Image (cartoon, rainbow, N blue to C red; front, side, top):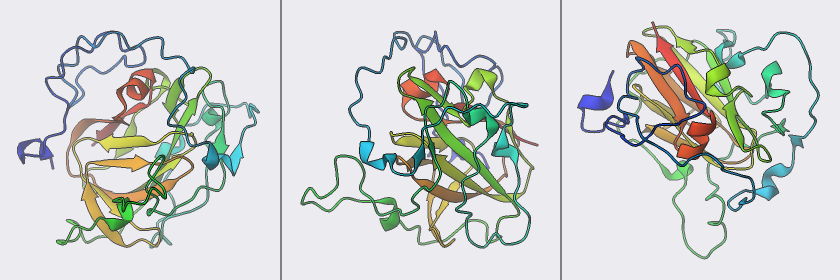
Length: 262
């Protein structure tokens, strides 16, 4: 289903001013990313400005830079066994590609709660809307459960100001493949100290609770530092789609993937 014609288009068309996007080669023909010319001045994003990072979320992070060697593996395409998918997996599965210069930390025991207001909004005397408060009254569009589970890690290196998925910037990555018509669970696991609002084009992201209950239908889902969230997707839109962090300097640095539905 292409939501572009429903009045809720978020396909980034007509975004002129976006040339010079260093990690974004190979985007020819990708649905929803047309008109991205002219965006200059996004180089030189040094790590000197580190405001907004949640240093308290560093518990449980593995800062080792050990290289496991072997062939680079994009484990975002790894499907979990068909059985036992009523509840999202909580075991971190780090790809070999996370053990390299583009990644300076890994979270082995991520939190799954959705009721955290986030950096700068905790305990400020005001009620703050969180993901746990959201609810779509009509329920999920697709009543099926997931047939498989895809896990993708949000990764980066603050000193190098490198941002990636599974330790691979967009130019080094391969597409994530969805089978047309399938129902699957996607897990986003944040191995960094910053919040990343992740946007999957072309298909709804149906947020679920840690125990697998449907919560809300979304286009973009913020993933906080050291957090692990899951949502269900029905791959009903054939074609090539963009999947990226909505912080433009993170997307420009490489936190971007292509999704192919076929």
